[in-house]
Image 1 (spheres, rainbow, N blue to C red):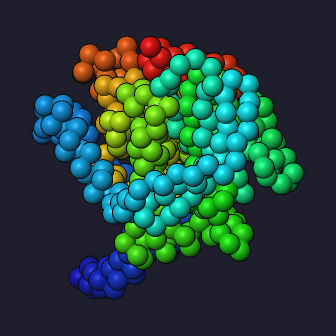
Image 2: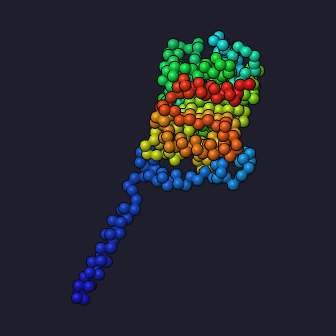
Image 3: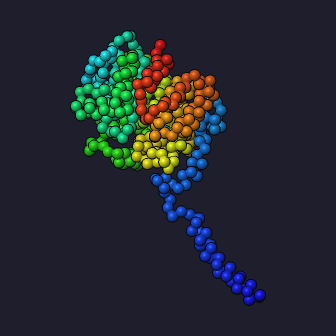
Length: 389
């Protein structure tokens, strides 16, 4: 019996390293990334508590919170390109039904002198309300402002490209022209990398990453440059005699929607905003199945470090209590519906807290990633309600 006990003890003793080795092999995975996501992405998301969001922040006075939260946003977007006098010049004009289309150039910053389309009503008496029209991403870089305003004085290829895009995304409508025909001054510029602000050698999908990285190497970030250019667009409109500076709105679809609520959050010179098909939460977007985890198209909409302070709807809430409209599609594969609903709930909580929920419109449409004529009509009605005298 004694010998048997000794044998069993020795067997147990010598078998321990084997069991430990087996257990150790199960303590970690032989890889750290799955479908472009760190395998610990769920744990990472759990650390995002958004301490600067309205309701989470220790600042309980809304105006003081708004000032502090906006400072946080700018600290993540900065530095801003230095400003310069606009020095606008008109290159070409075209008379359209109820308005004049102008191809202009202006200094959007001290760094860049850029082309743009400016549409000015010629019916009725100004100054008029105005809308900054912000183009989408669409992985379509050859055109930018031409997605919002029907181009003129361009090659047949560019016009055909723009016409096709209007059909594909905007229900055959140039939304900028649609608003100009209804009495709005419209401005549309190319975001850096699109249209006439593209790459000399020609743009492609992969070079987005190089541009974003090179900007970061020089202390800037792509989304910051785009946002500050959009802010200067508002400043430019406010400087025009044809524009009522107290009635400027902003409108965009897809990436243009992201630009629209970012712009509305960043400056109070925007009095109303509409964002079509871009609103969600980080929790819903950052998953193994959503297209966001592929990177690529997200580069132009990344604000370094902002998720450590605020989620997407928290940033958009900086626009409160001004009138804002958010539309999304129930069949939009880019933005999970549950995330849209959560974001809308968060937005309404903020507007409700300021007794301004009657100025916030959120709606889920039974459709895909698309800006239909019916959606355009409701958006126009929204701006008419809040920007027209």
